[in-house]
Length: 240
Image 1 (tube, rainbow, N blue to C red):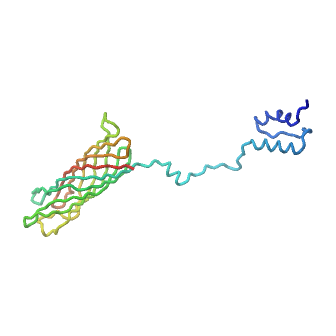
Image 2 (image 1 turned 45 degrees about the vertical axis):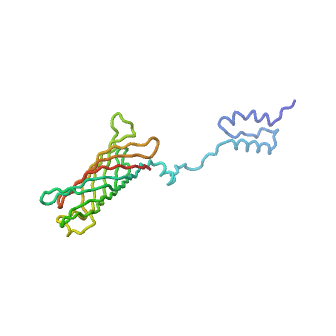
Image 3 (image 1 turned 30 degrees about the vertical axis):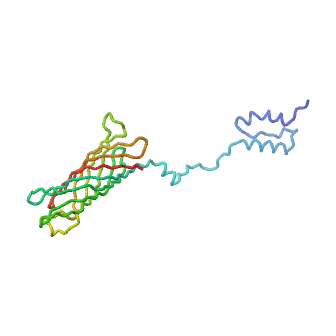
């Protein structure tokens, strides 16, 4: 039984193909035609990985891929209501309690670190002040707070519960009447310090949270009348 010359060549060249992948010298294979030799060499070349030419350089990631690689810090929006009591101190050191009520408030913010947040927002409310003729005037109160908020996890509590500690400044605008109608009107833009202490909890497996915060503010010194307020707020928070 006659063995095919092509089969003998394949068995002979198998160690070469699995080793260094060097092309064999087929000059001594007289039993093969030139066409068979070229077809066999092309078969060996097709099984070899191409060698890159020139210098291989690291490709810069695309803008979208680089942005996705960066860790985005969470942001949030909190919508709720607050009730406050406001008092004014006139030049005679007389304290008058101004009746205040409920008002809506919106805060937006984000995380500087895992437990440090920043916030800013706006609140609207109403308050009463007595005019020179003894009648009461119902005025508007616009507050624009901004500051830093610490979200601290008390010992022994789940990591979805936080104690909130807020501190910052606020800009207050009292409007709705003429200054000539009051002895010492609490009207116009005024600045104040803000402090707050509260509690927040996250709903399971969701981006929703709720909080209750007791907050107070006091006006900067130097302008009469001075004013200060204390209130309680409740909000629903959406993180994104």
